Length: 379
Ligand SMILES: Cc1cc2nc3c(=O)[nH]c(=O)nc-3n(C[C@H](O)[C@H](O)[C@H](O)COP(=O)(O)OP(=O)(O)OC[C@H]3O[C@@H](n4cnc5c(N)ncnc54)[C@H](O)[C@@H]3O)c2cc1C
Image (cartoon, rainbow, N blue to C red; front, side, top):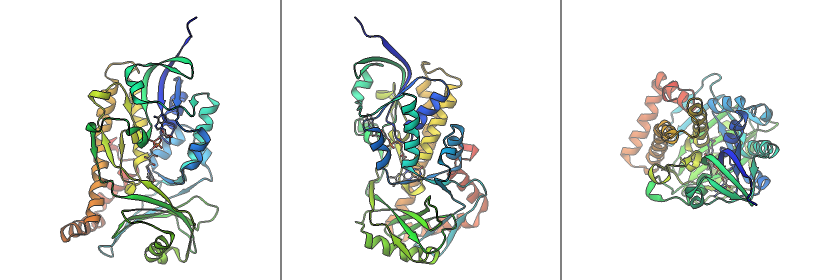
């Protein structure tokens, strides 16, 4: 006897910080969704040690799908952003009431999202899906059951990208690694986030969610090898004035940085690639996930006027997401290159850009509104 075919609207490959949220938003809109995750579900949720700077737009999105309330007491708000470079003593300060973001732990959001998907019976762990399988058909056998899907969405992040044809790639500078860790400090962090362009790479310090205001995280991107000792020295050198004495946690975690922009047109036109499967940018601007939230919002907006089956759905989606992705990819590559080169010309350019931003308040406002995801021009 033939198996019954299970009919679904969307198949989402990857239940990371973006795949899970797309699935929850679609379920809220009554779509039938299945998420496949190659890792075990709770293992995936607890291995990520990073924090996430959530901008104002993403925070509103999390509110719209009722997840923000669940992060109550598990987030810390950012009231000010301070940017400095080793090139001069100028400090660039961004302050925009309400528009600033918050910091959360990746694993908190992921475990809340996974719990919802498990409850909805919309996720399967330990299920690896290969690109070749996806291109040939929209009918699949998964764990001995037959499925058919209207739309297949790839949200497998950087790891999935290993499977695609790299002729469709623009690649950025992957010489950096990101080092992440935590520290207690003597003084209150005052809800200020810092980005210091040191000689050897950008060092960001973010307030981390904690019962005291004396706990922060660092994200240091560099080509150098990093140890607890060297990290403590670097933080002391740059932040002893603002944070006082620091006590660094023993473990430091490293993450590869592989910036790219993928063009799925032609060969992969039948699939939608979103989040880090579509583009990955250097974490210097803290925007990779925030851009992924915009991918999800764009997809949901398109669904209001086009059905999943409509022929030009994918090409319209990509045409809406291409420009901003290119902008962020190029911007993060240029600022990193500028501060890495350390030549007279690049130093001059770096110092002048910072001075210009400092002088022109409208440019500063435009810049911060874009970073917070609330600039209407590009939305
Ligand atoms: C150090 C660092 C700090 C960052 N900080 C910020 C920040 O502050 N703000 C910000 O906006 N962004 C930040 N980012 C970027 C952000 O982390 C990523 O953009 C985001 O996590 C991407 O989410 P994703 O769901 O696309 O991919 P992932 O989180 O990588 O999830 C992909 C999932 O798919 C699964 N998978 C992969 N292949 C398959 C397969 N074949 N079959 C089934 N499952 C599969 C994986 O196991 C994984 O669970 C940072 C990045 C780094 C490196």
